[in-house]
Structure formats: C-alpha cells, structure tokens
Length: 145
Image 1: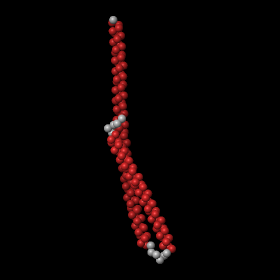
Image 2: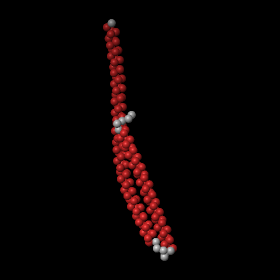
Image 3: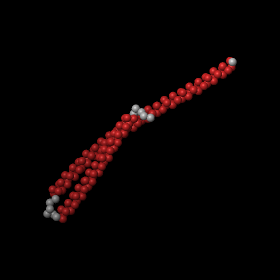
Image 4: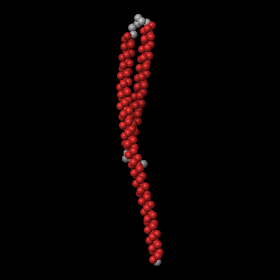
C-alpha cells in the first residue's frame, strides 16, 4: 500500500545512494593518492641509488620536485580524508532521517490496517446482531400466532 511518506522515502533513498557513491569515489581517490605517494617513494629510492652510483650527477632538483609532488599528494589526501569524514556524517544523518520516515510510513500502514480490520469486525458484528434480532423477532411472532 502506498503512503503519503513514499515520495519522501524515495528522495531520501536517492540521497543515501548518492552519498554512498561519493564516499566510494573518495575512498578510491585516497587509494589512488596512496599509490601515487608509494610510486614517488619508489622513484626517490631509485634516484638515491642512481645518485650513489654517479656522485658527479646532481639530483637535488629532481629530489626537490619529488618532495613537492609528494607534499601536493599528501595535501590532497588530507583534503579528501576530511571530505570523507563530512560525507560519513552526512550519510549517518540521511540514513537516520530515512529510517524515521520509513517508521512513520509503517505506522501509517498499521493504522490503515487497524481501521480496515475494525470496519470488517463492525460489519460482522452488525450482521450477527441483525441475525439475532431477526431470530428473536421471528420466534416472538411464532409464539403470538
């Protein structure tokens, strides 16, 4: 049975799904940034080994560039992690709201069912009462005749 809460439930479910997708994207971005940092660390190790083998070749500029790129990746990772915290809080709020709306819809359904069941019971009670009255009336007429 549809309830007046169904449109709100659909909207909240879409919102929760959208937030979940954003969280997934942010987690993938963090993993990608972590891979980038690891790759830069590997590049720095290789460069250090090459520098040890060829001491006359300066690698200071390359190492500085690697540090700058690593700092940029770490800054973006921190920003993405902060965004994840925000998204998780938003998701918790949206899920709580969705659950509250679903509970209200369930109460609406239960109330509708209770009213319907009461109406059916009242109809049955009326049929039984009218049957008893008819039988009583018929037996009175039978005695008087």
